[in-house]
Amino acid sequence: MWRAGLLGLTIALFGGFASLFIWGAIEIADILVHAMNSVNR
Image (cartoon, rainbow, N blue to C red):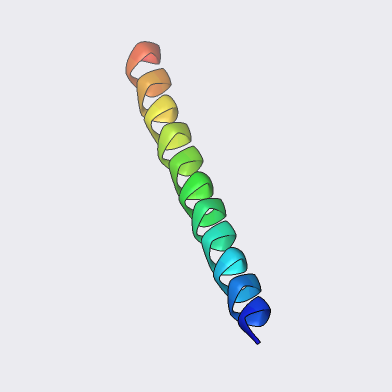
């Protein structure tokens, strides 16, 4: 029974880290785009 809970917790943690990593990548890309636009002007 506890294995199912452990599996669910692992999936939840993995999903959380994945979404956080994706959000961070999007934020970095947005900053880079703004920096490139500033350089081009």
